[in-house]
Structures are given as C-alpha cells and as structure tokens.
Amino acid sequence: MKNKTQKNRILINKEVYSKEITKKFLKDITEKILSELNLNNVEISITLTDNERIREINKEWRGKDKPTDVLSFPQDETIGYKYRLLGDVIISLPYAKAQAEEIGLTLREEVLRLLVHGILHLLGYDHETNEEDAKIMFDLQDKIFDKLTCEL
Image (cartoon, rainbow, N blue to C red; front, side, top):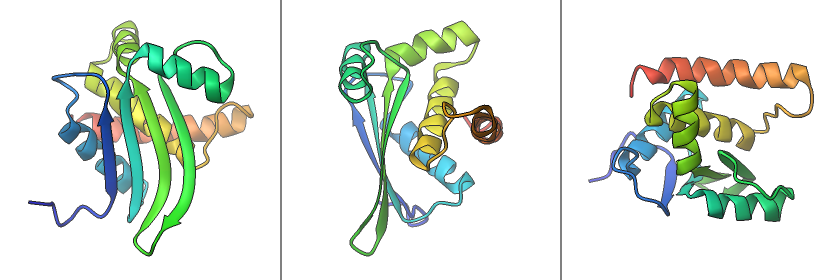
C-alpha cells in the first residue's frame, strides 16, 4: 500500500547490495531531505553503485578518471503536470563506506550526508565556484544533516 502522505516520486536503483542501506531507507531519508527543503511533487533518481562504475561516469561527464563519493546530474524539467524532475544522484557505496570510517560516521550517516550534498547540487548549490557559495551550501547541508541524523 502506497503512503498517501508521500508527494514525491523517488526512484531507487541499487547496483550494489547493502543490508544496511535498503531501498526503504533511501526512500524514507530522501523524502525527509526533500521535506526539509520544502520540495513537493518532484521526481528524483538515486543510484547506489560501486567505485568502478562511478569512476567511469566521473570520467565521462567530468573528465576525472577516478572514483568519487557522489555525483549529481540536474534535470529541472516538468513531467506532465505532476512532477518536477530534479535529476539523478549517484553514490558509490564502497567509497561512502570507506569515507564514513575515515571521518567517524556510520554508513547510514554518510549516505545521508551524501544524499543531502547531491540534492543540493541538483537545486543549483555549488561549493566549487567561490567561498561564499561554498559556505552557503555547506551551512545548509550541515543544518539538514544535523536535524536528520537523530532520525536514523
């Protein structure tokens, strides 16, 4: 039975297995992030992949022949009358796991952090252009992360 309060379309593609990071977890936490950003009636695609696949995508689209933690591909189109297509967020689960261990987060916390980061990029936030934009993006990212971490 579909949750009637869910107003967004969240598509999940898991190319890698994780008992801890389930499709339900990804949908629920993405819905909470979208709610924090006051976004309704949007469609977003979340893909969990491995380091090799994200390296290929990173090379093809950004010219960087190395794996990374998260990539975002904004769309910002309207689908028919119901959904605004935000775009795609791709996360390397092995990269996220290693990064989580390195910075002292759980895997769920790191996936949350990467989802927030990726979704902010879909909305046009950027941390690579200048320090002021980076501060705005990271402050909002931290605010959402801090609020939602307690719900994991």
